[in-house]
Image 1 (cartoon, rainbow, N blue to C red):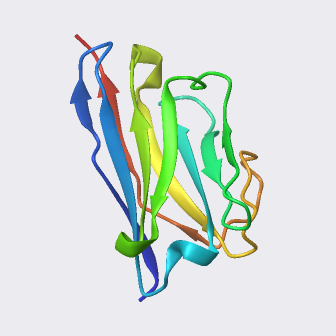
Image 2 (image 1 turned 60 degrees about the horizontal axis):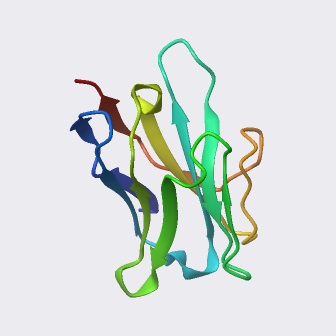
Length: 125
């Protein structure tokens, strides 16, 4: 069964850090671009970050630039999202998605091949 599984979410205080993981089963991630998206209650899903598998280029939404870092470990078949200096407005369900074309995009309408089930991140004191 081909699937993506996110983990690493939880409750953290403002200013704290979390590292999200996106692990693949049934396929290898090294040929896939990976995007991270999030959706807060009552809001539309938004792109957070993505990493291309073609040239390793990374992209970030302006709201997380300088605070979040996306990386991949092909040996572990996992992509990470390191989130530092977290703010209450980062609270959302975070999803990862895999694009077999290798480019990825922060656009919500982009056709990713696989999506994970999401992991909750709550930033609150």
